[in-house]
Image (cartoon, rainbow, N blue to C red; front, side, top):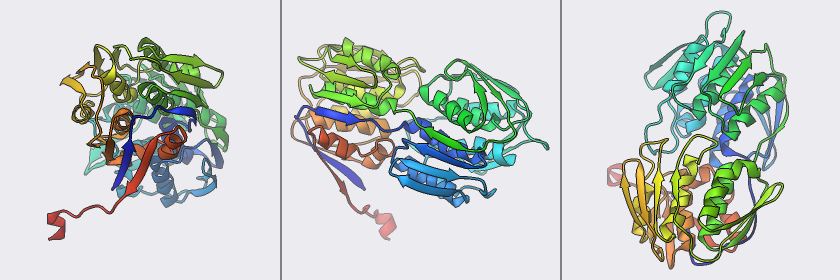
Length: 430
């Protein structure tokens, strides 16, 4: 069991470097299965999700060399046509990208239904629809997704997604990259990590155009031969530190970012009265005086990201007036609100709407990280609260934030990590 102990009340000050994008990396690593050659990937975040995916690839026979903490070489030339270990697959949501990767590489895939954060049902029906549209036969049975290409390979096809789905868009791109024909994805998601995946595959020899728009075209190629690629900075990690700077009334320079990717977050922080200064590859956030109320509605990119709403809720909980969050992506992503209320926040939740009345102060207590981003919100709340906050289930946070303890300490935070053996339940003891 991993816990964070935080003594709050200290403004964050200094410089924080941003790691590579988690959401790009967890698609790019499975996509290396398509490549006959060595992929040298730089700016890989050292997080638990990445370590799990590398373990899965290793179990399938990939050659993996860690050249540094953030650079890895992967050689899938002699990878085995095998089923990824279920005990690993079920620990990470992004394992569903193995379906597209194995389907494209071997002509068939059998992958256990994925795990990861539990904040509501996230069906993979759009993934299945996409694979079917490009020529695969897909069934779900006994907890596995089984996909099979026709003899001779996937022909490609036209996919019109019913909803804008980041995961489905990326999975279809992976599955279609080695097809025999052309695939067109309409109503595609536009997130920066989709562009990054397409750029990675193109660097390895794929032919993908339109990434970053709502129509993406994939012209299948017979083979990809390897190369070098650097992953983009993590938009959500950057946003989290920007919000932490504003929440604590600090002054933080967030380095190694693409400011354009941060536009929606920057705009809301300015609306709340924070001062945000943009540079070529950095953003400075500082705040003086109490924050102002703001309304947020989560939307697909370039709208406000659902992965940032819980962090913003901490600022809203301390802002003057009543703020609203409308969650339009997931049904049950407000579980963290009960934890913030335990710290003295005043939040009412009505299905997909959170009504937040600002209070003067949050108070430290024991809270839980309900999922990855909610865990980051609990850390921010602990940084602004008086007394001591204990964030339990902090392993969720480490799925997506590299060295969060070290980075926060460098900014002046009083935070430490405690790892203890899991307590045995009475049933297990018996």
